[in-house]
Image (cartoon, rainbow, N blue to C red; front, side, top):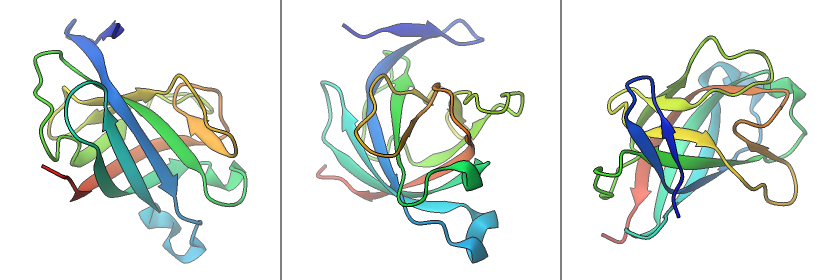
Length: 150
């Protein structure tokens, strides 16, 4: 049974799938441009799995464990939103008011009805599940569709 949360516009958002991203090792010379990522979107009950490439700009990433980090995000949209190929392709931003160590939802800039929010489960190993207390905060994420079976 999907859970819902209310946005500031009081529009109900529903869990539509999980986005799991593996961040590349940090390149100190490219730190201002963010960390590259390879992401897998698994829609809940409709749609095919998709692969995205992207970049994550993370504040405080020097406090993250060394090595590749996995980020799990719950994709939320209005129930009326159709799950179509390339749904997640856009730039997402967190509210600047998020406190240190507290991740606010990432809201789509082109389509603000798409929100990336806290994951309910963490895989083994180094991971950041949004909404959990962590030493770093994702401020911007940019996703581009790499492959889709549709």
